Image (cartoon, rainbow, N blue to C red; front, side, top):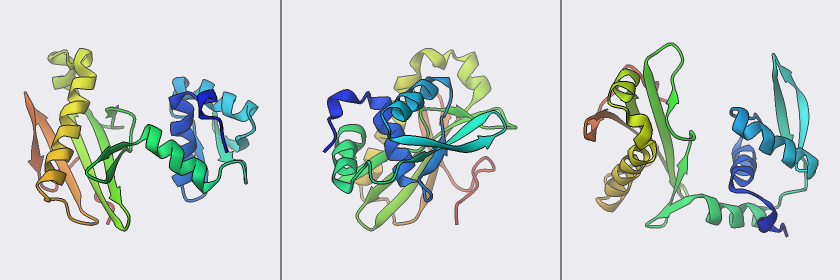
Length: 183
């Protein structure tokens, strides 16, 4: 059993993300995660597997994490609502390459049920209205939309729901050009 007091939240999120990836491998997402990945390497949980340009690809060390460890970490890290896990697929709003959009996405899952939610804010709106200072508030609005959909039982298995921000709220949009469906 792992002593969770030794792991900052960022490190637990990295371990869970790698655990959930099909090949148990991935990259550090930005400089803030880079230091955490190096600490996990020192603790023996990760090993480098090669480079992709300047980025190092990391893999979970076999046998270090067990299913019970992962379940315990999920309870500490992942949001729960009405028995559903709400997993941040991205860490907040991220700029989409080749566009002036920032997007945050979430996975909602429970046993054999999974659905996706994506929220877009136009980058120029974000800057012009100085929403940077209210970043957490915007994430909380997105989470509130997800919770409302779950409460009203409007979420279907394997569906993707997309929303755009029009001050002061998110509005549901169907098949927007900025979102590529996974199926």
